[in-house]
Image (cartoon, rainbow, N blue to C red):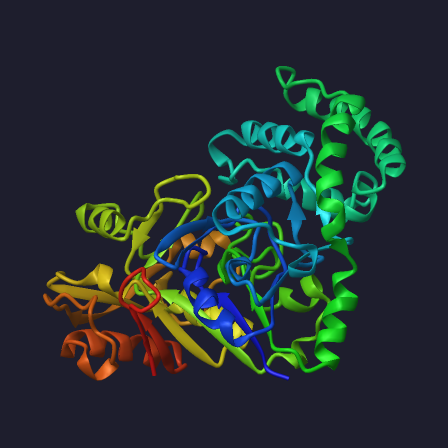
Length: 427
């Protein structure tokens, strides 16, 4: 069996969707295994631009099965809005082409209100979430008492019973945190959400069993990550992280498929570094260079529209993500954004308390003290968006790409020089 995984090695937004889209025709099944509608992929396909959040990039290919697996948390209303946007442009998606795990957990309106209340209570120390109720749904999943899974959601009597158990307790908690928050009614939620359940029911199946059969039948699987390694709940820059295992560590728990079945792990990085929300960012450029990168790279959130913080390439952070996920090779994205700079910097180590450090710190206060130690590389003036071979890149652009691979310690096999599918160098 050939199974491939595409993992972001930074703080997310690495343009993984383009790589997934390029690889999808070579696979039978595309699997989204974590996160919710806080993640976003922008994909150009057949000359059109699609902004995907919950749906895997495989949804654009009529010959591929798209699976939303166990580790995903699903906002039914947002999901159906996204699906309707796709079907209006590309036609209906039958249940055999889009499967949703009956073990996946469901986001309800009170999750968003609860998350907003927690963020408000933290004040200036707010984590900077997308306010989509992702973290609070995962909290319920871990806590179990208030959790509602898709298998419950599509059974009306079970859903009604669960909502009448959960909603009164949620109201007490939310009102205690924020007296101005709305008070939720179990029957009102039930009446709205059963309509969503009716539409989703044909797609809800035991995806773990389906994926196990696919493995036995030697189907080619493609695992599509969301966010990035440095946002991993266990291994990222806690607490400024997402609420699931967004590194390669989450593939097994999120899909039910053993990592042993994956024989190619592609680590995706931007040619520079970005992050959204709070938290330390050693190479951040809070100046005109950072603003230039933001504008040229259109560094605004696919889901939220928030401007991303931009900085030089941090090889300490990306190298940690690569080792954490066990990648085989690298894809360097958005190289064209850096054209026109006189010189570029790659952070190859940190200075912390006067010591040179090449291991990524486990504690956020240590990362906050980190001063980047840079390797300076001359920039290039040429437009590289038409280049299709590494050998045809300007000398300094090639040196920059080679330096990224050298410092991280993995070969660069894919380079993106523009948003379109054909603006990709495959070596």
